[in-house]
Image (cartoon, rainbow over all chains, first blue to last red; front, side, top):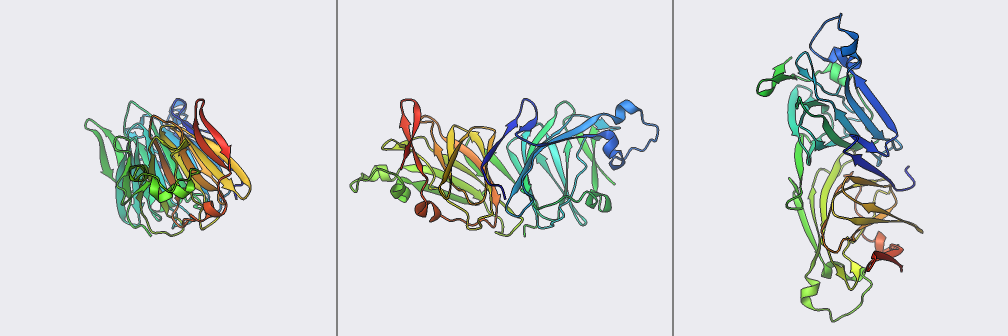
Length: 184
Length: 184
């Protein structure tokens, strides 16, 4: 159990959560299988491209505690499909999550069994992701990074297999109109 | 259990949580006993002064769900003691809470048994209030409202008696320097 109050800060200049103790970078090579494009001869420089960064503040993973992180998804696409997070579900299926938009323009994709939903992520807008809904975020602004703040119960756990076993029904591609969905 | 994703929005123009379904106003008459000043003949207009407003989005009060609200504390003081929330603890003592500053300048007072702590509440700054810590927020800017966004486990429950049985060790008064603490 967390004993003493502490502080974090949304650092909009550095696109991080100040006070976080866990930092990760996900590159194209770490998630290439989640994209639709298939080419075994992709060049190394492309594979090293950073897609998103997460800075997370850890607390004991116990009921009643809350985890928080800042995610930055860089602008870009992989052969037309916008940069996005891997996406995940929660091991504790009753555990929800709130995403609060800080900067940029994105979409939150959500999948529960056969049901697909999405919501726009914009500064000041909070998406409530109920338990049982796998979630992925996509940066649909080709010019600017997407920044959002997440809060979720610390005992949620992560289920990354969930989005492989039950993939998101739609992919999001760059388009002359901005973006378009493609059913998988 | 919440079935479908939903959206709220921090409405910085109206100082509310758009999409909330529970609105409350707390006036001086509702919390006068929490202030140090004692005068049984206080005039009615003063007693009707709104101290703070809360707009909350309700969800089932079950483990794994998250409640969220926007609190606006108006600028002002009651005989020198700054406008503040009543303060409360959580019935489920393991339940934490996160306060994210949106606008204005405040202090979060926290009391756990005999231990007192405080943190500044500023835009983009998040205060993690661990389980067992009663919490109260004070608007220390005499000119501007204080706005903050709170997220906490929906099964926390409220314990308003906690701050009467074990009062905050310090009060916050208006001062030529800005503010000063007074031990009770």
